[in-house]
Length: 107
Image (cartoon, rainbow, N blue to C red; front, top):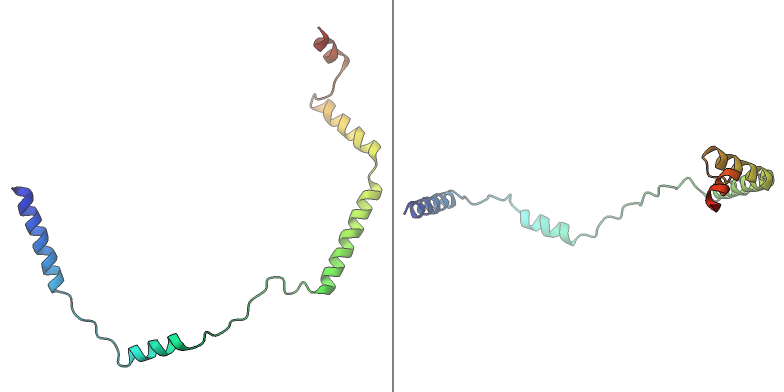
């Protein structure tokens, strides 16, 4: 019974709030101005390109630098130093095989 009173009260509150709704006053010629804007062609915006400073002359210079640095790296690279570096890394972190390690695995 109590829930029915509560529902009736909520319905009355809703109807009272609906009666308080008023019409909206639009400015004169509002509809015409909106329709006019809708039919206008959109204004084209200039696309802002992020790398617009990266012109072909800068691209060529960057490519030359890239090739030069890679060539210099390849010429200074030696396989002996690489194997020395890898073996020292393996010894430091205990990744290399020593005679005692192989002896333990053979048993």
